[in-house]
Length: 85
Image (cartoon, rainbow, N blue to C red; front, side, top):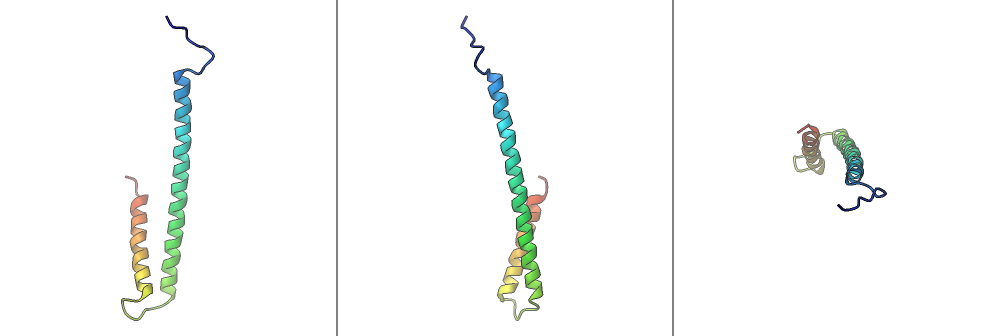
């Protein structure tokens, strides 16, 4: 029967340490995701306010119209990402 070294960490202890580190990493990534989502929403709202404040544009090909449409599409993407899957 092989001698069990009682001074070293057991496999269970190593596994528990690894699981705790994974939980910390998941929490860190979740907080980062929430921060990025919050910042993206703030930027989209700001762009939409700027486009609306500029008033009506002359023609559909104006840069503000393109920015507003892109911001709207991006806000839809952010909304879809925020929905639970």
